[in-house]
Image (cartoon, rainbow, N blue to C red; front, top):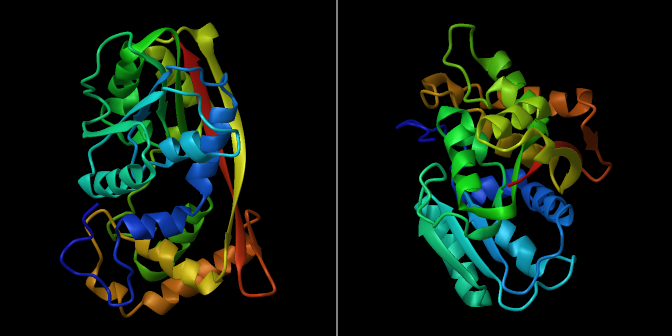
Length: 283
């Protein structure tokens, strides 16, 4: 999201690096857990990394402790944010990963029918048009019979509580709202229903949850990171936000103390627990 023409001087620019800092290892760890629920990849497997971002799913496939991938796999990766794709391309080239990277939307894939063994969309589907159904239909279309689609969404992300606290502390009730994940997408039952509406058979869908943990070295820095990334209203930063930055930061820090998903540490760091829903749907 474009934060608008005004940005408080205290705000950290919203870019690839800020996303990496706020999510830390969490989305990678969810991807690793999701991959661990699948059958081991076989030689010649064709894998689709849908909404690939900077390549976290591909990285987990190629470098995770689950063991090296088999010989002769191929990965097709797509996203619509060229900044992320450029970073992914540099990493993939330097590490010689067997991946082709393209700027293609998840709901309009260019790949052939019945082609892939696995299609993975890690924290992607809920951001696509029409409630994610076209994107999941496309994932189903490109899978071979017996192939597997995997998609994830957060069930619990305590960072959102922090942003809401900062918003309430610094803005009146008539202020533009924060950009938020639609409430139904926190529910595993909704993810399952979307998969069914996209064409997957009910008895071919499995729902799992995964808890992952992030440790940040500096709680105050994390407060600024969360507010910079999640505290922007849908219309962009407000002129008052710079003057009220310390108030927002204090509200976030207080949430660290009251939310059970955060644990403040004696050295000034903080540990957060996040929970993800993982859907595995077989064609």
